[in-house]
Length: 281
Image (cartoon, rainbow, N blue to C red; front, top):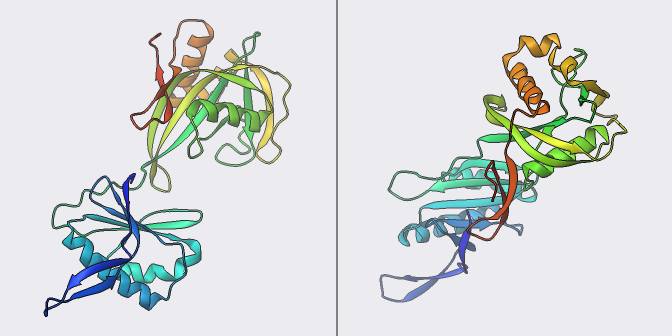
């Protein structure tokens, strides 16, 4: 929904049957790159007045050949949600402080992008010079009370790179500082988090400190464990996904595996990003 140009749509000219020009007040918004309009509501408004403006705006945008109409409502303006829904809008996505609604007004097939389909997570493979892995036992979740030692894991935050998330999560859960080395592997699963799919990246980090200070709110225990002992845990050996990751970690520990290192790059829009690759440039 990147925007190509701002538009002031507060007033539009409308021809009357007597060829006079009548000024019609419309909602303010911006055009996007896909013949759409994005309206971001910021000021409180009477629902009836808002409904009238919305209907007039939809009529004008349809005449202009616009297609997808996006309306962003902050939580403070939740009283306007019913008005928008009654005009044929659907929920698209919600964040902590706003709701995004959308409607396709063109006669063509709806080509609006769906809401984000994946959550992204990381697992941190951290090994010291004694071939010991940094592992944890969790206070909550499916592993609570199981006695299973696992890699530190976490979710990538919005706007955060995978390599940075791995460093942050490791620090938060164990207190250990580390540097990102490479992505060893990743897996995709489905219907794992409120019907969303999940991408999980196993990242190798080089420890810069070794004293453990576990996160009291989430981690029951943390320690350095011989890598072979980690891989030989019954739970790991009985679950193919965990067993495969353990074998990858063992291969890396034995210098017989090469992962994907992070290469800084820039997108077409000039944003800094990373490409994960084996290619040395």
